[in-house]
Image (cartoon, rainbow over all chains, first blue to last red; front, side, top):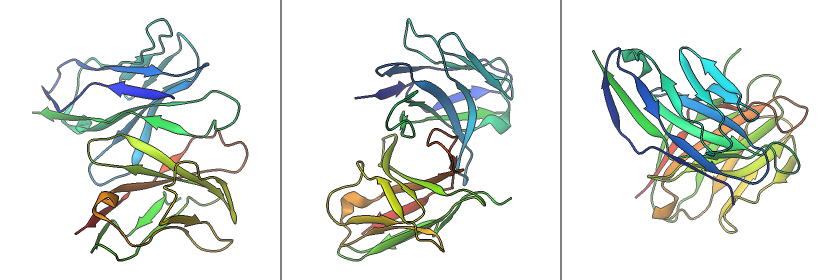
Length: 115
Length: 115
């Protein structure tokens, strides 16, 4: 079945450091790929998404590129802030056909950014 | 527009008791999804409901678990005779009517602890 594997945490960085959180997936067909963020005490929020190969999703300085050849969707940010401290989830959803509403998540990566 | 509401945020039950988790979708949303996050795991799909209909319950344990989304009121996830293994975070998401592939908006989750 479909699966998502993401970098184990926790990740601790200093403010303005470069962030990479790795994510790889296994799926049939052409899934859509997502990054969700969960701030303390809140629900998951969609951070960015990509729906086809070579698409780049971006939001709030975060970027991720859909790489079909390496089945990856790594999250990057050039300069993190303390306010980026949160749990980040990589997820996929089938692109079409039945069950195209089911999201499959990775385990989540806790990011802590220190001043 | 209020987001997806879940209550309670934290629920403690003793083995054998019943747990009722509530989810109020965003205004105008008629599709509800429940996901479970076991410790050290990613979120896993449980059930997809539309008003008064269960569309897909393939992720629900066969026994003790049930879900409903009545015409009026919140969606309810019910766990009868809870066991320690039910301890998890339960997340609800909602999406607008139309195809099931719309973006899902998540609530903050209910953390169930079974003593």
